[in-house]
Length: 279
Image (cartoon, rainbow, N blue to C red; front, top):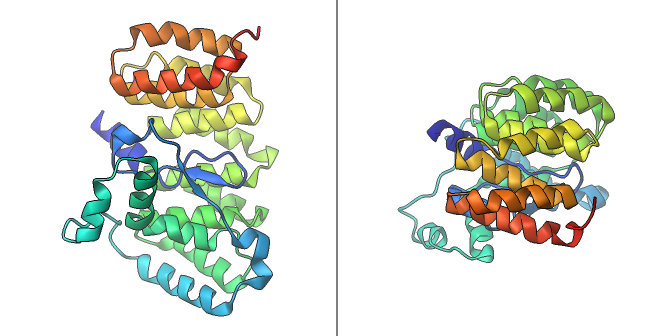
């Protein structure tokens, strides 16, 4: 159970819809994962690449290079500002805490979709060689926004990385590419990845691409022995399900014993309620 939580909480970024904006969860607080909407990467340069001041690119490039061999970001208890952020529990406070304690999030947002050759080359270098797994994940997702199929083999290779963080980012990158040819790899992650969080995310992506087997995987996770897979599966079912899934979740709500999973099922049911009478 402990390994499952670590794999899921380190997965950065995640919860993509295979198109911008991309929601991501980077929280270190498992209790917030299912009660708050995920953060959003806006990828501003996707719409204004030609207008980006070269000085901005230079600073982002320097930050990326500095982070390649750095230790993973962590909340610094010695920093009073960060300590105060860590105590915030509203949606806005949660978003601020994640934004300013996870530099990988800001790098992904700033670099996502760049068409600058030097930046792309450095992102690819970071995605392949950085010792900091958050930086590798940021490099993968930022490259994916270029929608350039030349990076497909890079993303596919990262699906076999020892780090769950990197594998999650690779899966998200394939979904952002949005090409039908990646469906096989997404299905493979949904079936076989070592981290259950990656499996569930892959199943959601598979369902979103029109493969009903992804839905079946999520429904099966509702019976998992650990609360985390049950809650995560309920989240995605609430996002994409219909009347049948509403009726299934109603049955699970009454017998769910974990408070976080029960809250997630309730939230999913509220989203599905308008569809409850669908066949």
